[in-house]
Length: 432
Ligand SMILES: [Zn+2]
Image (tube, rainbow, N blue to C red; front, side, top):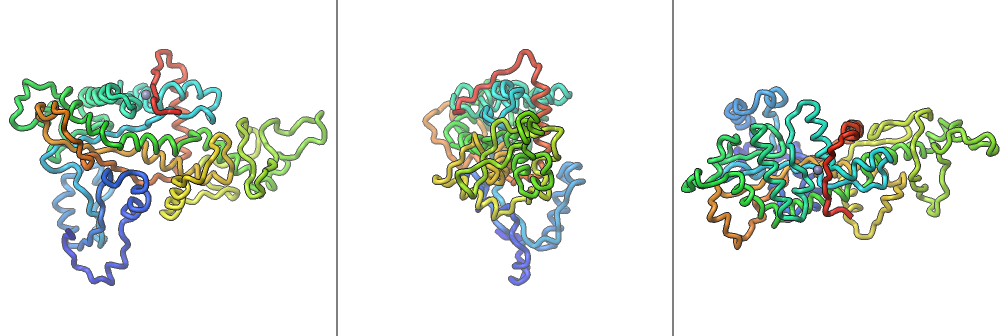
C-alpha cells in the first residue's frame, strides 16, 4: 500500500498527516454515511518516488493546472484515496448545487418574493447566460433533489442535454469511461461490448441506469437536509446578524456612543430612528437579546465591518478542526435548540460555521460508478443497488474570507433576476 517506505520512524513523526484526512474522519463521517465517502489513508512517500511520479504524470495534467501547482517532492506523507474514476466502469460526476429555496424569515421585502420562487441555481444560470457563459439550461437542482422519481429523471435528462449542447464544457456533469473523460460524440463507449449501439438511445438508457443509484441511496437526501439545515438565515440574515453583533459589542458602543444616545424627550426624536437598538433587556443575563427582525444598519450610521471580515470589535478567526468538531457537537445535539427566527449575537459563530459548511455541501460533487450499460440488465428492476457505488467528493472546508464575496454575488444574482418576466418557478418539495 505504501509505495516506497524509506523513512525512519522519527523522521516520519515530524510530518503530520494531511489535514483532509483528519477533517474527514472527525467531521464529514459524522454527517455523511461512511460508505458514501472516499476512503483516505496516510501513506509514506519518498523523494525519489515522488520525482518519478512528477515526471511520468505531470505531462498529463492540463497546462493551467500545471501553472498553479506541482507535486511537492519534499513531502514525506501523501494521501492514498479510493480511485473513483478508473477501472472497467463508467464514472459519472454530478455537481448538483443548491438543493432548497430559502426560508423567508430573514429575506428583505425586495428579495423575498424572488428568492422563494426561483432557486439560486436557476437565477445564477440566468445571470451567467446574460454574461455570455455556457450554462446547464433547463436543469434545476430542486428536480434532482426532489422525492419524485419523474422529476429526478427529468433532471438527469436536462444534465445530459446540457452536456451534449455544451460539448461537455458545463461543469454539472462529467462522464468518464475506463478512467478517461468522454465527449458527447463518444456515447457508444458507455455501452457494454456486446450491445449494438444502433439499437440504443444512449440518453434514455443513461438516465435509466443512473436513476436507481440516485433514488435508492440516501446521498441526495442527506445533502439536501444538510444544506438547508445549515443555511437557515440565508446570507442576508447572516450578514445582518454579523453587523448587529458588532454593534452590540461594548467597545463598539463606547467608541460610537453618540450614535446610541437616547433622546431627552420625544420631541427631539431618536438620533437614528429604528437603526441603533439599545442593549435589550434579556431574561438570561449571560445572553443579550435577539436581533430585532426590523434591524437594518443605517448607511449614515457608524461604520460596520463587512460580513466575515473581523474588526477590533468582532473577531473572526478561521475555524480550526477543533472548532469544526465542537460546532458539530452543537449542531448534532438533540438537546440544543436555536430559535432561528430570532438569532442572538452569542450564536453568531455557530451561524457562520454553519453557513460555511452549508457552502461545502452546495459545492460538492457526487461520483456514481456504474458497469458499462447493458439495457437488458438496466431493465431488470429487481437488481439491488450497491451503496458503495455513490460517493461524495470535494468536501473541503470553506474560508470565512469567501463570505463577503458570496454576499455581493447573492445581491447581483437577485438583481439580475428581479425584472425577468418569464421567471421560473422552482418547486422545493422538502421545504417546511
Ligand atoms: Zn431551479
